[in-house]
Length: 190
Image 1 (cartoon, rainbow, N blue to C red):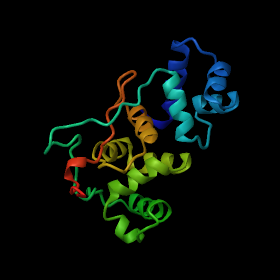
Image 2: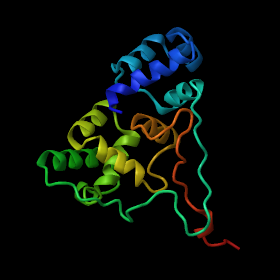
Image 3: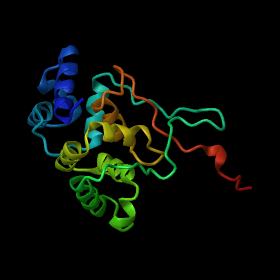
């Protein structure tokens, strides 16, 4: 699902539930204009808390983290989030700029060595404009790869839910479980 289709999906779900824009907006605690802007793709920013509220109203379940047997992981992972990007100057420049903006704790040169981490950080915290630019230059497939290979801690629960819906990885009402840290790998403090 392209980013422009996210609002259409929300609109279709709202209509399927027999809700008007005004009623859904009132329940979600946002203005009708904001909801209309979201549905038409014109909203510049919307907090994931508000999006999570809308998703819950429309019947989507933010699934709890999966518990797996020791030694199993929920998602295949690259240990460092490294993934070879084609040598595209536009993609490299975008990643460097986004790394400078969204991965402030290390240098952009260090950040771009893990392009999936940069993409994941933009997906989790980015503005609509940055996300749309990343989707246009890097492509939906690369964004889905960042989501699928994300280790625990890369996504907040509500952005995890949003991206699984936006990228078509969620069946109606069911979001794949967010990667969780395994408690059994921590040393016992006693």
